[in-house]
Length: 106
Image (cartoon, rainbow, N blue to C red; front, side):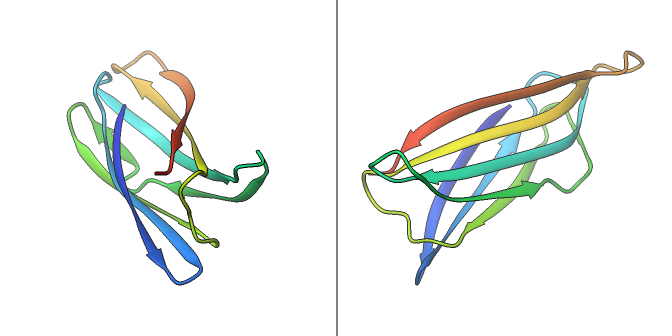
């Protein structure tokens, strides 16, 4: 999966809006995108999730996601992304996959 996003500030909230793309499987299901905001001291200050609709995303399809955080996101903070899904090439029951990465807000 590939992800691209932008952060929109709305007062004391931040919305992470983006798109994802299924790069590998015939289809992906049950996609969840979790985002946690971590301050400069390493404390998690907010966390939320997006359950991606449509339910099934075919290979090379792009899908939108949006995660609202109840805090302002500032330079020096980290956003920790975790995504989960079931990927399948058909008839095999699929593979449950979860991966995480961090992105520094500048």
